Image (cartoon, rainbow, N blue to C red; front, side, top):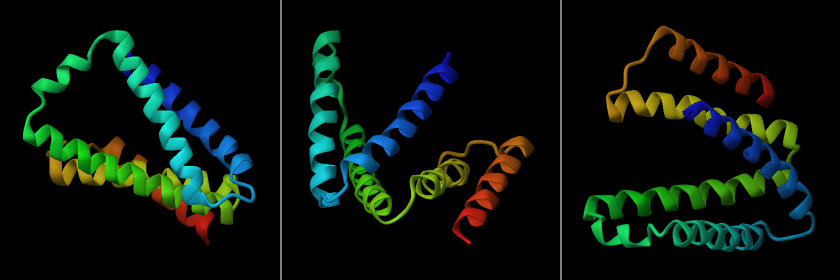
Amino acid sequence: MWWIYALLSALFAALTAIFAKIGIKGVDTDLATAIRTVVILLIAWSIVLYKGTQHGINGLTKLNWAFLVLSGCATGLSWIFYFRALQLGKVSQVAPVDKLSVAIAIILSVVFLGEPLTLKTGMGALLIISGTLVLIF
């Protein structure tokens, strides 16, 4: 079932690039990111309130808070740089290079989370890195 959500994530990430490229024409990318963030904030909290899971906030530990805040900071910086890259480059170049994050996540998951690096996963990461280099150069 996880792969269905992953495919939906990929679909919406692709739509994000297309919609953003059109939406940021002539707009400051930081302003565009701020608007996008408000929309996401409203959607995310609407889902939480609809599901009634807002009470789980009381059970968060300091470690949960610290890493969720760090994740939010990383997300925000990623969006800021992504929108700027989209404004300067083509979606067909920026979006695939952005997906280098997949290979980086694989490497970081091995180093920091102790996840196993299988031959298949390692080869996939190398192919992503190779493809990214082809697109850049």
